[in-house]
Image (cartoon, rainbow, N blue to C red; front, side, top):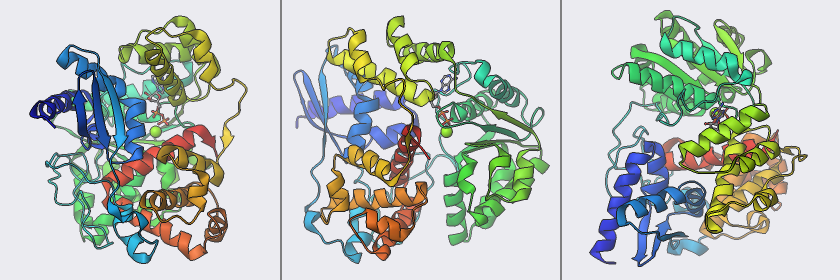
Length: 483
Ligand code: ADP
Ligand code: MG
């Protein structure tokens, strides 16, 4: 590869780093390597099929426009998956389960900081590729705020009136209007967007003030790590100095007694010190079945606001805003068609828009309404049921594998890894028991599937990249299927 190639790629990366939220840059771009940059084409190598597809779906256009900016030319950009390492035929033995097969792809050199906290080596023995990298940045437990999720970018409507007005009030006068603020809705209706908007607003007003935004899953992981490392006090203390604590998706704390206990103390500590608390969930506090009563009652101390699916006009307005935000020119006719066909989930709405634009790019720029019609979901199609089968579908399409691969006996690294992930997700997202899962994954013994689950569960704690990967998969599954 020529020096020029390396240089151009570095320039592209530099620009992307400015464009993207830190976490996205780290997850999607920083691990890419240029394979070939020739006249008219750029070929990149991604560490996994997952990263390849994520990139293609989200960032290819951005990369292309960055290239155009830098070189003044339109170039074809393609992504391939890096050659897997030799251990392809390794056995699905304990050693393999504990070893390299579940490790995230190696990261390129350079100690870039991310929003992730530093983490100890995994219990599996081998050092993780991320280990040893300097991980500065925010304090533990904090996740990056997405700069695009602002009040300005949020379309207000009847369906989210109370939730958006209350969020705004809380951002303007933290701990003085509603405390806590509890937002709930079905998936993809803007809870996370509002939570980030509050965080972004607070940070802008008071850059020195600390805002902690985290997901409940991450909160639970941090707590477990703190206990393991005997850092409970540190874990608790850090909340005393914040101005706001934004906790996303508290429904994941159901059944997690220890974490509920910790959240209870955190809540009291914050509340007692006049700190703003904002929580989100997929249901109202009353609808929890496995959450401590004292937590539920605290969640209701302030204001509880729901978000309903947007009506047609709002869907069109949201699409228009998203298109403008991404610098896309899309005819109203197309926006209206998308808004007609996709009605219950804003994330899906956005997905359809991106797909439409990708088609248009392929077709040379002009988006034809018939084409858009052809790939949009049927208006009448109900959300599909969330089953082990639907999880297998999402996993296989993300990793370019077949259902037979997941259920079969292949011990190829990529396949075994995807299989562990599918088993893990099935256990987390459905009510299936381990014996039942064993049956659904090629008549495996229940102890084998249990081991897969445990393995992923413990690796997530120490491997931020795997954590992100699983989180993305979960979101995709939840937004396309209903439990
Ligand atoms: P939730 O957390 O409720 O599952 P998100 O906040 O992640 O949903 O929203 C999914 C996507 O839809 C995000 O890209 C978000 O920006 C967008 N979105 C949802 N509601 C709105 C809205 N009212 N205006 C603009 N974008 C919205
Ligand atoms: Mg969310």
